[in-house]
Length: 408
Image 1 (cartoon, rainbow, N blue to C red):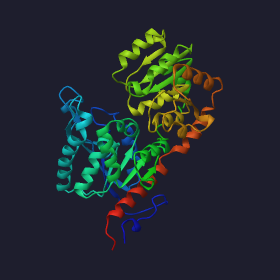
Image 2: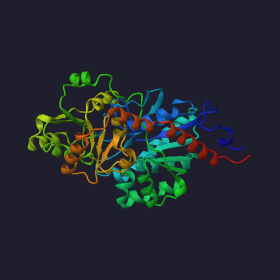
Image 3: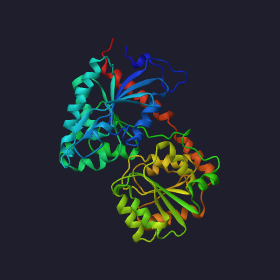
Image 4: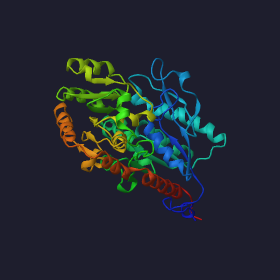
């Protein structure tokens, strides 16, 4: 009898059975020096293990090269976050070469770390890997070496951008072939995996969810806005300050939106350029670059805003859309992957056909001319909790683990 056959349906109330033992493997995972780095992977894992049907040890390697990345001493070799034990081996990621060398140096550092953990008594039944390249590539090599099934979650640019390069594409296709199962966080992303050669039966769509307890409408929105020092129409843009996130487009759109203030949450290399752009556009007094904020502080900003703008050119599934809607704030989104799946009703907001300063400004005017009831926006977001995704993950891991076990 296979192990999967002995376990109850994970979606059934009161389901019982031995916990699945996972190794979550990702370079996109928060650490002491980078608490917001890859927080979407951590959030998904926290919900997966919350019910006790799965447990995980996290192997989250950190890149190192002199002068780049967090200081070696800033990231401990081992730490605990939210009850999960994290291990952070260092791997070399030389500037200008990392795209080509990272799968190999990541694998080398990770295999040594995993070997130590297994010798120390860690028991693992499957590898839960996130991002196809370099993480998924190295994870498949680890799975082959240690005899473990591998499930890779694809998240966006690992299917849209990196496969444009010949060597990464070949290694990504090898990871797709070698993985026991693939997870896509949106239906659009699934189509990209199929285009890369993934068999349809190997890909499961399991969207991200939203923490409906953390992200909720403020008890007193007027008091919250006063505390944050905002008034009038307030727009919010959340994400790393990099070109792909499109903050520059929203800043340019503000020139056509008099009386609107833009709050930008995030940090990154484009900060100075964005500040200069705001000055050139004559909107510096209405743009606030507030830097990165702890995840727990985000609901206040979502709740205070009148609309959240996502101008990204690429996203697998933008968690900020659900977070904003769960706080009662509708969104104006670019047509990035997953956007039309997340924003599928008028009370959620609207999705633009293209993201330009002009279309963003027009979208904001259209949305705020007759804004949806904030309670209706929250009710819409309540359909995107984590329960369905967690049940789907449990069923998938049980299936791949059972498939590796000999019949008895």
